[in-house]
Image 1 (cartoon, protein in one colour):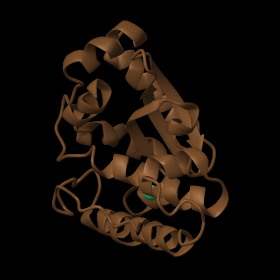
Image 2 (cartoon, rainbow, N blue to C red):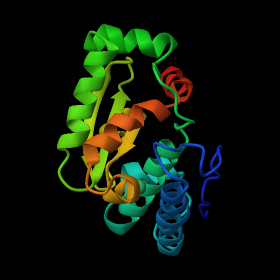
Image 3 (cartoon, protein in one colour):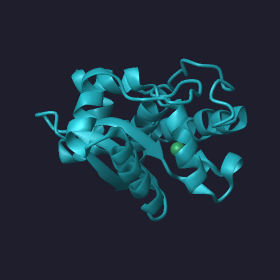
Length: 194
Ligand code: MN
């Protein structure tokens, strides 16, 4: 099989001013497209060519893992975003689970922000859950994804510099602080429930 670049369910400028149309254009149209092209070039006769994307990420190593992981990670990232809103809060069963496990949304937000800010180099910070619905915050370097730990990815922030450098230069904490406004919590709850 070959993979295709996902279509964004919003206009390139829909996330402004948190993320500019220029950032989305480069990040989705150039960076993610390159990972898709690379994987499609690497897959033929690799032994992974008939697998679903998640299965490739769970079982591969090296260049195939790096490119497949980056496709899975970016698909999860881009499809969980929406236009900015103030007081943008988790909903439903996920909100209850966050309160139960972390004490409050504010406590969760502080812990997640700290992990995303402290991640050295390129990578991703995740909210994930196990098969019992137990939540955890996971730091992954480079193309890492919680599926390799048998955990379900729910929410993620891309902290590779390409995700924020156009808009925030080296100020990763400002990007993380603004990111909370554009999370589509309905999508995150949907992932949590299914
Ligand atoms: Mn990225």
